[in-house]
Image (cartoon, rainbow, N blue to C red; front, side, top):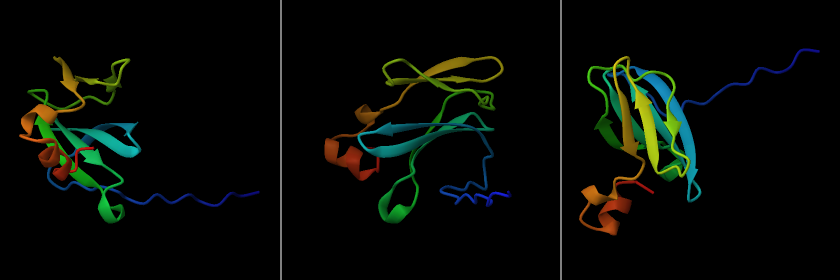
Length: 112
């Protein structure tokens, strides 16, 4: 028989910088997506944000020149993310709490 078509629901859209790669991770019951872009940026997105919406909570320039290539990988302890361009391999911390002055400010940004 014919199976029903599965339809996806977009959780995040980007018009300015084309997405080139994605890797997902569940951290403390939060679903996170790390998205690489054509311009060499990494977007950190909480896909289970408030009211069911995705929340982009950080953008980092990780490779220059871009684009970020398709395959990204976590370190064994999931504390680092390895990202490649055609000429560069970059290691990026998954958490960047040090950029905030307090835990409340970090959590207020949407970063779990």
